[in-house]
Image (cartoon, rainbow, N blue to C red):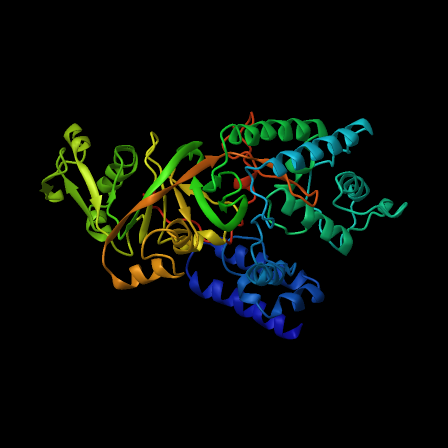
Length: 466
């Protein structure tokens, strides 16, 4: 405590010396600061002693709460936790088995509805382990009703948020596509408080989507991308052979629902910037960052894409600028990465690699301009081309990349591909799964995916990537 008082006096003397000759305001500020510091009880002063300078700088409130250490522990835990958001079962999303599982889930949820549903958990401040809260018994009843917490007689009447409840909240969060923090926070309340009738309607809606996928005969091999689940499955002989995390279109550049056919693989592709991206993103950026084209190795072409134009000669604010075309050279900086999966369709979307692989570590991955970026894309390419001449062995795609030579592979066995939008389903073991309705195609835009984004996760840098 004596050392703390000495530092307080030193701090005040520094204020006075820096403001020598000025008005008495500095003296008043110094005396107020000293009074505050000396009146702080010894325990709080000792708690702040190790980082005392942090409480004296800036205009924020001094942190005597220990939250800084807690945030550091949370960051360490987050880094150690493996992302577990891919479906674990070999049953394809597009299957009769999935239809049966969703029908069973609807029947179980109807039983819950007949029994009165589940209670509403009053929203408010965060609830977490180690704290007491009047809402904890309500939370327990809510999680018991949905099967996330096992009932224990009258045990759920406890007001204490314990370890078992933390595990139940994590289970609920995983089922709903939320970060499994074990804390009931802002992003968790909307999912908790959807009524059982709303969940039944959501399951029925998605049952219809799965049935629509089955309206045509199921191919022996195909790729399916579930947009709101941010994942892809490669299916062969009615079993999922591979699953991949994907990045899909952000809300204002949505990935469409589409059925197409994969016809080619393009290694070391050029990126021909779509007009929409050029007009909405690229040209406005060039007006602020004239060196952007050079840094990203993007060339300017005339309207016919046959003649290169010096960008220094272009007035980017003129209407004529919108007639120009842009093409990015192949390479590690290319927005498409090192391989493009060509699937001609009316929406001009496709699947591809990306140089921004750090974004796959995030649970919510709506970052693109509509196309789908695939994690582990070379494994998917090997699967797609498995029956092509001279391609059977694993690792062939990686070998092509290591050769450094551009290569276009036209498939002799084209692969159907589906971009679909399924926000609710059930697994073979009975687990009922929901995902945020990121595009509002279930009826209303659900911004939980944005709310739930971890502020400590790497944000996507400003990019034009499709």
